Image 1 (tube, each protein chain N blue to C red):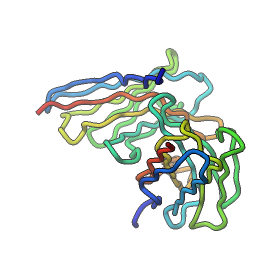
Image 2: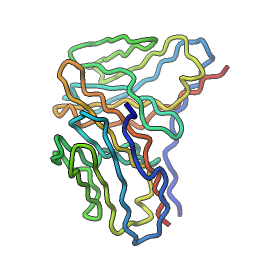
Image 3: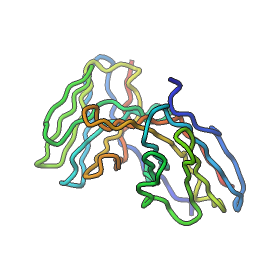
Length: 116
Length: 112
């Protein structure tokens, strides 16, 4: 399997612009997670989905952030409008929950976002 | 002025030595604990996990120890190799096992 795929790998944009980050989870996984990593705040969970349904979005910073999962193989994280403080590495992760196997989350390579 | 990022604690070990990375967790109700490794420019990679009903679990060259009394978790790496150089994160979860709370990380530097 190719693992979790994220695009783009790097994004540079100007303040006020819309940014869309994309994720393809591992085939067959039923959970999908979006994280943000910064030096100041570390790795934070933003939102996660189960079977394409958002379960917990309490980590989404504000209304400028939105996430969708239209089908089992695709999710987007959108920031509109973007601000310099949104600059971070955004990770997507997926998992297949089975009580016997634990709750391992498989992370993608991340998207490094820079908002000027 | 510009914000200054957190300075990660660093553990430097000689190749071949054993490494011990420590983590204090905050929630006494946490029921599931995980260690992740993150190499530069990559996403975190799962190493090992442990449930709260255990105090020790072993994997290949790694052992996780859990002390619930003092809310402490440690990762032991045997015969540390240069490829082990990375930032190591502990994470806790519970009651929602899918919701991980990550620690700030420890940088492991293996000297050849």
